[in-house]
Length: 151
Image 1 (tube, rainbow, N blue to C red):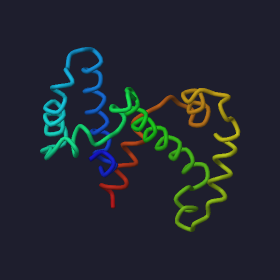
Image 2: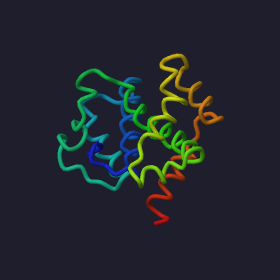
Image 3: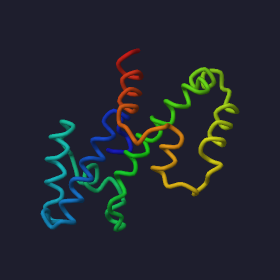
Image 4: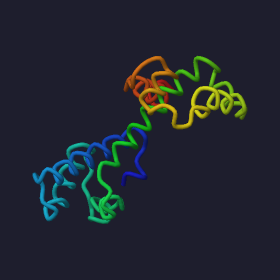
């Protein structure tokens, strides 16, 4: 289940949803075949055998509500957060403050660098303004590597 996935495999759940919804919208996949396509995709990407539609293709409400194209925003949020956190770590020693429960320096940095701008910039522009570069997956990969492989 996507909402129960760890942050390492979470993106693969998003990829599965995105690929299937693209196929649906293009007409390459029929709704009647969605359950089987979901089961195949989950086994291929995550080596998970889906036990039921409730725990598989029907686990999220987005499609039943007519909300398509939404899942990639979750993955983008992870990428944005990792890139912004990397810059914040360099500028204010994020880990130091978090370990001590000192949230004020973090809030102040976020206000100064991001929150004060509201909707003045598009997300892509704001990210470039804050981090000095366009969106990169390398920050998220580095975050996962440090958290799960370098313990």
